[in-house]
Image 1 (cartoon, rainbow, N blue to C red):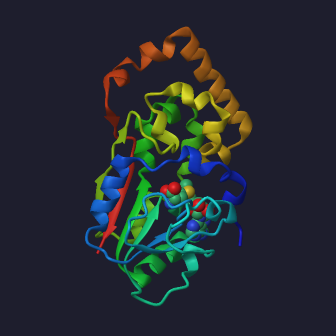
Image 2 (cartoon, protein in one colour):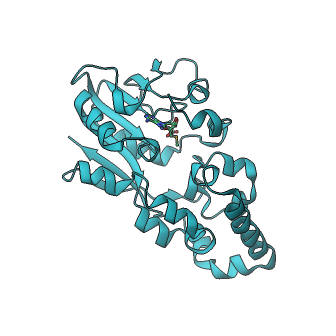
Length: 245
Ligand SMILES: C[S@@+](CC[C@H](N)C(=O)[O-])C[C@H]1O[C@@H](n2cnc3c(N)ncnc32)[C@H](O)[C@@H]1O
């Protein structure tokens, strides 16, 4: 079983602390589900009390699940080891873009559950709205364009309900756009290591982007160029919650 996160997932739980505002949106989408399976579960972020099973291929990620978390199986979304309709709901948070066969994985979620809740992002939107991608690392948008995110999920589930989840300025879950108002965070290799967009991109491209950002921060150019961001409490950076069923 290939598990990229065995390599890039070291230290994940420390920097990817579930954000309460994202948690609220996920729990509302799960509604009254009494049995939930979390697929691509990682260290267990956003799992509700009703989570009875977790699926995760990476041993590095499995090892970061807290004591008392739902029992986890080492498996992939594309082949879920559960019977049809085994759960009220299936949850998949920021994981579909890592699946080798997203269409099959999404079909598996629908096979084993009555409701599906997927947190992903709209690539076109984030490439335009998230300043780091737009102005410093457009190559990451080119790479993201091929990943299984919102358009892939909606191609499988055209009638699903989509809602935007804005990223608070002090977001505790250190995903790509989490630091939109704290730009110095992107200068930290430790922060970048927990963001797959960085960890899977050519290091030379990342270095170039980070050096340009550092220069703009030191010269004050960043602060004047993005002054409008500094007064904002949250930003729609393209994260989308997809609910079906
Ligand atoms: C960004 S992490 C998200 C983890 C967790 N859902 C969270 O929100 O913190 C992506 C996770 O997807 C897992 N993953 C990768 N390929 C997968 C697959 N084919 N099926 C299920 N999970 C997969 C990775 O190992 C990793 O733990």
